[in-house]
Length: 167
Length: 419
Image (cartoon, rainbow over all chains, first blue to last red; front, side, top):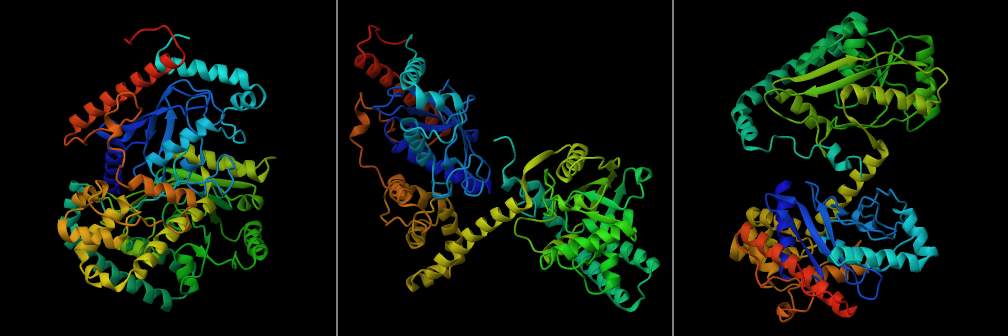
């Protein structure tokens, strides 16, 4: 079980090392534990998160790829689909059947043909287009709907913080 | 998410997977087989008795003990003095023979199917109250009248689904509608010396039974907990209170899942397996020769687990050359093998298109060395863990630095360089 999880993770690591999508990098923090990864995601252009490089951590279950990994941003984040503690709430991180946020069944779910790369790309599009119906962070969802300027300001501050630029 | 994944509530492999466990298992194997045969002979005799002897309480008790002995069940009741004569006992559900064990310590019966004849059914601790599926109201009424008339105590396992004991599932509440006073019982199960799991994800009743016969012994630890009264709680609150008591005594967490969640999960996994088998059968005949080679087939399955979108034939072809799982994975990832990615029928179109992207060899080799691009590709994948980690750290730093420079340029900030 763990053997095939390891092999698959190694294959994905290799794939992501040689052919990563632009602005994304991911790999195990320490190869002694291949089930804990770190990822950096660049905020998509033309959005309020443009230019930021957001660190996150991915925790894989021993039966990966049958079950999805868990993902959590390790920097400060303010986004409708990210909990205050950084946990990411998107459909691809949930297997069909468990439906904590009441997603529609049509949304893309975890299955073994998905991959770390797909998750990270989904997170990039989530940064670009928040889904304000699933409110992991209710305050952020409300601000996104009602006070976009203020939201953009907060996002800008977070972007600067991730780059180590004084705000 | 706070609670355990559903998959953690199952054992996936029955036999020990580590080297020491495996070694013990192999050493034990001949003894196990002899034990299994002896117990089978004993079991057959018990069954013959079960059909010949009259159905009276004394015989039921003897047969119950004999059945435990046959299955190698050793019971250890921690606090028999705490046992009270209530009409309903409630326990967690960790093995297919919980009812037999509870029967022998408390004399109760568990609602269930008929086994062979009435004497054997009762000795196993079961009683047929009618079919819960066909007519639930009659089933419930039968149980209710047994409780009110106090003929025999009833034992419920309101989880209604066996787990590996790492959690207590959500209770079904109907048993709590028909009783006011229950004594919770904790059941813990262990197999000393040899860690053979009681049940696995896809095991059947008879394979579980064989595992009982084969194992040196199966220890049940039973603990009676203080009686819980309904008072004026609703049945949901009453059920939850009992569940908390049991989980607390077992020192495990309360699960958010219920039996039906587990059933759905199983169904999904089984569908997956069936789909794979169907795909395997639909493969053209040209691979008949490949399929007949079990080694290649086994290795191909391993590769397929890692790279589900590569066609089976392609994997076999490459394995014929390499005879090595890792080498074939490398060949596929490096683009030395050409293939048309296959996508399972149930994925959405967007997933299909991107699964091509994931696995197709890179076309962006020349982008790699552009300093100002945000590409994080490495020129090669290091051979040692140390090389890879170094390169990973290096590229992370590079990405942040490039992003920072870009940001500064774009916003015309007056900050020079970086730390």
